[in-house]
Image 1 (cartoon, rainbow, N blue to C red):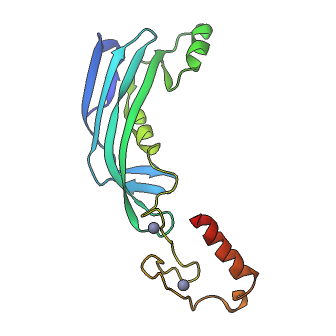
Image 2: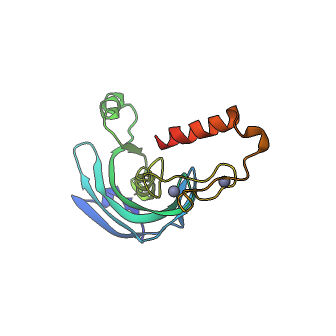
Image 3: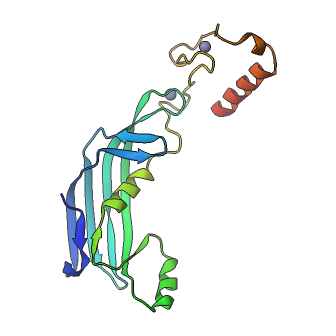
Length: 180
Ligand SMILES: [Zn+2]
Ligand SMILES: [Zn+2]
C-alpha cells in the first residue's frame, strides 16, 4: 500500500491502515529481517498549526544477541507521532514557536511520505543492547564457545603468555563489568 498522502486532500481527518513493505530494518548492527508483517495504522488530522499524524507500528524482527550472537526475536510496538507544518517564507516567529514541539516536519510539497516516520518509529524501539536473556554469559573470549551452553567451560586456547598475568585478569575484569 502507498504511504504517500496529499495533505491538501484531507478535509478533517484521514485514516491509513495496512501493511508496510520493507526488506529488512537497517540498523548500525546490520539489516535485520522481519519475523512478522509490519502492521501500521496512522490517523492524520487537520490541526491549528498544520496536520497532526498519530498511530502505531507493530511487528517483530530478528536480531543477534549482543553478547552471544544467538538470534533473538525483538517485538516492535511503536508509536508514530508527527506534526506537519507548511514551510512558509518569512514566518520565523511561528517556526521558533513550533521548534519547541517534538517531531515537527516542515513540508513544501503537500504530498508527504509517511514511510520515513514508520521506519524511524521502528528503529527507536530496538534496544541498544539486545540480549537473549538478561544474564547471558556471552562467548568465551579465547575460543568463541557459547558459555550459556557450556557454563563449566575451561578454555584450553588461552594463549600461554596470558595465563596468570595482567592480560587474563583484564579479560576477567571486562567480563565482570559486562555482567554487572
Ligand atoms: Zn546471548
Ligand atoms: Zn574457550
